[in-house]
Each structure stands twice: as C-alpha cells, then as structure tokens.
Image (cartoon, rainbow, N blue to C red; front, side):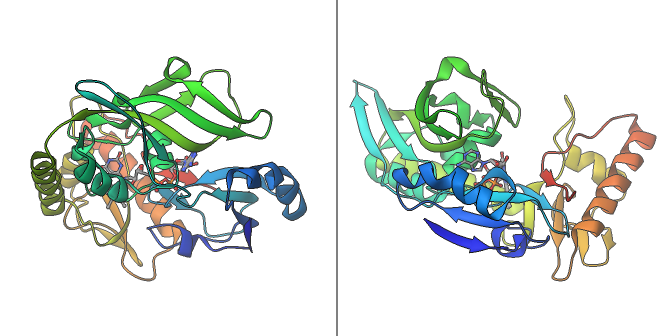
Length: 294
Ligand SMILES: Cc1cc2nc3c(=O)[nH]c(=O)nc-3n(C[C@H](O)[C@H](O)[C@H](O)COP(=O)(O)OP(=O)(O)OC[C@H]3O[C@@H](n4cnc5c(N)ncnc54)[C@H](O)[C@@H]3O)c2cc1C
C-alpha cells in the first residue's frame, strides 16, 4: 500500500483547492484493503473513498479524514456475452475516459453520453454520474466492494438505490469502496461508438468549461429547471469573489481561477442559493460534494 501523510486536496481534486487530510491510502492490490483499518487508525481520521476528486469541494483547513484512492489495478474483462449484450467487469479505479476508449475498441455501447466526465468508475457509481439522459446506474448489474466490516464482497443491483446524482447500498450505512463494477453493454460497431463519443464530447466542450479548474456542476437542476439558467438569469454568470467565480462559460460551474479558496467558494454558493430563492422561489441543492473541516 502506498501511503501519503497529510496529502493536500489541491493535488487530489480538479478544483485544486482545500486543506489537508490525515493520510492517503492507495492499495496496490486487493489484499492491501485488509490493512486499511489499521493504517487509518495509525494516522487517525474517518475513512472516505476518493476517486479522481472531480466532484469534491474540500474546506481550507485540516480534515479528519483517511482517504482511500484506488488506482486502476486491472483492465476491463468480459465476463459473459449474449447475442447483443456484453457483461464487463470494470476496475473502480479506471477513468471513464479510459473505459470509453476500451469500449470503442471492444464494440461495447451504453456510456457514450458520459464522454468528457473526468471521474473514475468508482466515483461515477457513487455519484450515479449521468449526462444527456444516460446514468451510470442504467448499466450497473453488480459491484465488488470493500467495507471495514465485511471486507471484500459482491453486492447485486437489487440492493442499490440510485437517483439523480445519488447512490446508496441498502443495509450498508458506513463507508464502502468500489473495487469493481459489473456493467451490461450493448454490442455495436466500433465506428458508431467512436462517432457518438466524439459528438457527445464536442457538445459538452461547447457548453462547459472542461479545461478550467472546476468540480462540475455546483448545484443539481431543480425539477423541470436548469440550475445554470437560473444562475445566469440571476446575473451570476462570471460573478467573482477573490480567486473563485461562476464560470463565464456555464454559470453552474464554480471555477478556481488560480488562487481561489474553499471559503470563497462557500460564500459564492451561499450567495447563489439566496439569490435564486429570492428571485425565483426555488431551493438549489448542492451537486458538488462538500467536505467540511471540523
Ligand atoms: C469538467 C467537469 C464536468 C463534469 N460533468 C459531469 C456530468 O456531465 N455529469 C455528472 O454526473 N458529473 C459530472 N462531473 C462531476 C464528476 O466528474 C462526476 O461526479 C464523477 O463521477 C466523480 O468521479 P470521481 O472519481 O472524480 O469521484 P470523486 O469526486 O473523487 O468522489 C465523488 C464521490 O464518489 C465517492 N467515490 C469516489 N470513488 C469511489 C470508490 N472507488 N468507491 C466508493 N465511492 C467512491 C466519493 O466518496 C464521493 O462521495 C463533472 C466534473 C467536471 C470537473
């Protein structure tokens, strides 16, 4: 297991800000998970699974957290094929971009609309990441997870509870880390999948600040409304506080322009919620996961 003491969230998240955790535990094989509770106890801190950090806004101070980050330990493996379906076991540490490249090569269709999302499979499952009507849960059949209580176990889709950017495992209250996800793809020609991936990516890039330092959408869309449009109409597109601003490209993306802090991000989010509530009578719910310091 690779261990980093006091890792900085600046280096672990796409928003590139925030303080430090107690430790970062990076298992190098499945057997390493056994040592996680012991190592977490040694350095202190509550266990938290971390993927690519692309949906995380971490507070500026010291976090009482022991982070578990799975690297990609194995290439996807085909478990079963039927006439038009392919069941594939995908490592929780694999990136969505890496999986989509594999899908093109192996003629597996289903996740193309997720092109451009900079997360891992573990993070995509835990957030039920989605785009343009396609969600990770649509394909999910089973998960291999690790929990401090049960160790490594397989769980079926039946105990998964998923919705708009939320996911839970019934009967599992504490932390769980996704080691592997079993996804059901449809077979399709490689050229068609490649074209779809490219077209979704181009579309996303034209409306979202994909290369800026952000954590994706700050707020969920209220029913039948777009959070980005509400923020835009409230005059917040491009609005800045210190080194943080609502992106001029897409008002629902909070952007760190270089020297932004979590404190500034929290202030901007409070302002957005207040303004939208006052002007439109709507409550904005956070999509980005906030890690607050004690
Ligand atoms: C430019 C940009 C565009 C984006 N576009 C979209 C979009 O279109 N749709 C969308 O849904 N999201 C989008 N996002 C948000 C984000 O990329 C997704 O939510 C992604 O799935 C998060 O994956 P991650 O690996 O970065 O997870 P992290 O941000 O590291 O973690 C997110 C959550 O998942 C949990 N988690 C992470 N890994 C694991 C694991 N192995 N086991 C268990 N739990 C785990 C964490 O504990 C945390 O609760 C975007 C982000 C950016 C920066």
